[in-house]
Image (cartoon, rainbow over all chains, first blue to last red; front, side):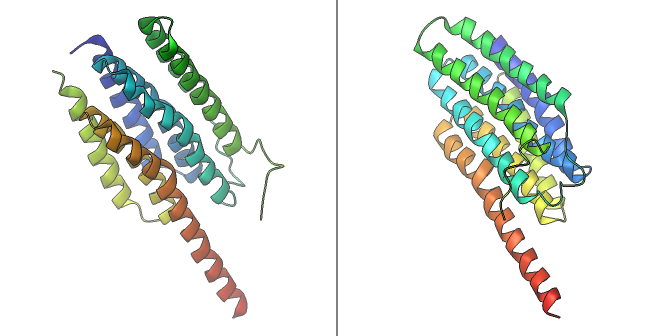
Length: 150
Length: 86
């Protein structure tokens, strides 16, 4: 067991359990925010796993998760808009903490990879992950009030 | 020792699946279900089946919650329309 796998295990256990606890209990706004943060909690673990197993192709999973996680959150933000109207979910400290964690993991894996095409892909995943996370958090907090259909 | 990550992923899957079943309201169930989809994808990756994980990720994290939430919304609208007709 190398250090990457150990880091992935710790990250997955801690952040995954916290996200699951937040999603399964408490009021609805907290649940939606925890579901949002589950993506940015698990995605770095996938990057660490890819590095730990020494298989760069596993990075595709992290790429897909960085793309689809915010999409899933936006689905909830749109379809639960009426329930979330009075009590907006806001967790900017946690959002930026998750973004910082993702950035740290991406930088660490980039340093281990060295300058190459794989590093560009990792940087792209990091940008997608942090950008998507912030956009989804903003949508949940009611930042895009102008975009409201039916 | 490398099995530790498999154990963690298995525990997370078991916990989230139990939590998804224990919820009473469909919207909250869909939220837990999307977390279950993400955790299942990690479990497949850890078991060296990333191709299965990819499809699970696509279906579990965005598609299943979308379908459930759309049907919940439709049922609620029909119930509201019925109340209004009364």
